[in-house]
Length: 83
Ligand code: FES
Image (cartoon, rainbow, N blue to C red; front, side, top):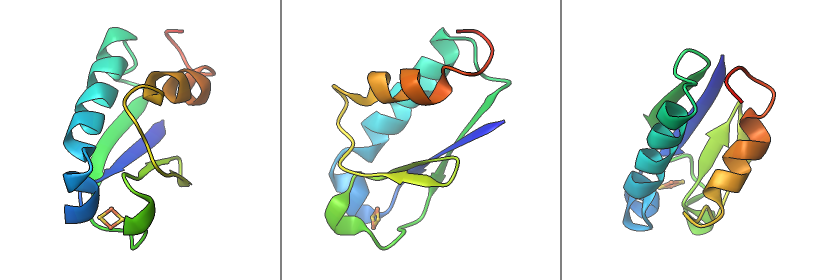
């Protein structure tokens, strides 16, 4: 099970983390990865300056933008079922 956690703290939220979480959720659905990937929100992790922040299996990815997020997901989720 992969764990994707989107920071929903106020700073990341104001930088678009809601849209990021929505994109991740629809990506997971489109690729039928629901049983392999757990998407959740988390509280501020103290790295606000670098937000919006997303953790994938504990690794922090910063400055997430919608344009490049699908490529990151492709890369990080390529080794699990459905792809
Ligand atoms: S609000 Fe996301 S790290 Fe602080």
